[in-house]
Image 1 (tube, rainbow, N blue to C red):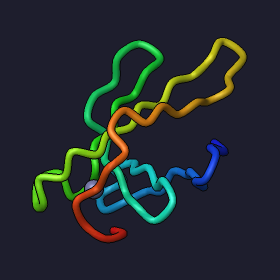
Image 2 (image 1 turned 90 degrees about the vertical axis):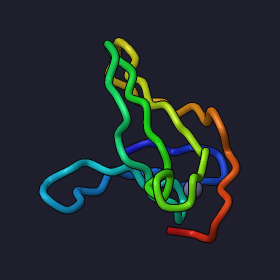
Image 3 (image 1 turned 120 degrees about the horizontal axis):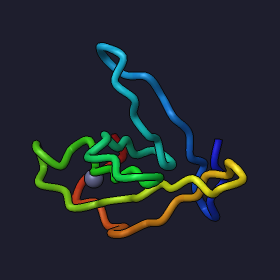
Length: 78
Ligand SMILES: [Zn+2]
């Protein structure tokens, strides 16, 4: 569980066991994993060509952090 200013962030398990990330009212799907970082793109990146992106990373003490790389969605909550 990650707490991020303004947003409540949580993991959800989607269709066929895929892991999704919810940031506030928006869903993100996993893009790629690289070492301790996971890149997520908006679940509507394909449908709406939404460019919103976040990155999560795990610190050595196990604490998870979230970085918003591109905050703007071009659609309503999904
Ligand atoms: Zn979006």
